[in-house]
Image 1: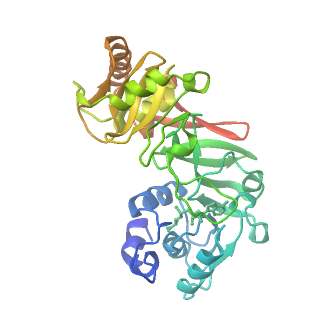
Image 2: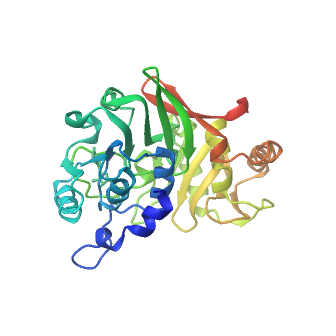
Length: 326
Ligand SMILES: C[S@@+](CC[C@H](N)C(=O)[O-])C[C@H]1O[C@@H](n2cnc3c(N)ncnc32)[C@H](O)[C@@H]1O
């Protein structure tokens, strides 16, 4: 059965709603689940380890994809969630939800044909490598640069005992924790500069790790978006910048103007709105010129997107590079 068929077959409402009628905060958007499952290439009869049970909805989809000749073990750090999911998945005898830190995998049912994580480890856990079959596939989110906002989901294949990078998609998920998650922090947990107040700004760039500039922070907070000459949004150029990691690469959040991506130095910035086309925040011509040159490179390389990124395994970390050495 293919993924679309399974999505049509499983009633999402049976999983994602709490008793009080609110959406369970640990629920993943269906489109993101679909992308992850497509990269996982699950076959009927396979044994799958899922990390991050959450609502149990993705578990139900996996259960249908492997069929009753297969098996799904789903682990979550939160005992309330695994108990809840076991209840809702009781009509799937080939599914077990277990409370466990996903970084240790689940050796009892190993080895697995597939391992999928919906929560981000700091590095590739050894247990995942040890518990994966030869030719098996891992799909998991990783931070691919030491900058906030630089998570993607990658596909890794076990080839002759070594993990090799396959596909990349844009999705990022909450960092793995050692206790049930109570605060659903976003990218700001990796920020290099954070403002104060109820709705603080934050920013992240390599130079900010060495230098603190109150002047930069003030300039950034006071800036307003202007129209840019670019037709796309910052989200479109993101994969190219992740693959290139140009000097001064910056990800930021403005309390009034949202997420921004682009170039900064201690003297200023040129940052594209992440979600809106034609919008940027620029402090001066020098920064504008640098970002424009990145933009022109992206365009002259055919506007590469996530399908042009390749994950590279470096020790226990993942980086991404542009295919074809661009
Ligand atoms: C995005 S949610 C998963 C959503 C789920 N796939 C769904 O369809 O609803 C991420 C889950 O990872 C769990 N989590 C966080 N840290 C973990 C860890 N160290 N081990 C296992 N699960 C963890 C959280 O409790 C949360 O339920």
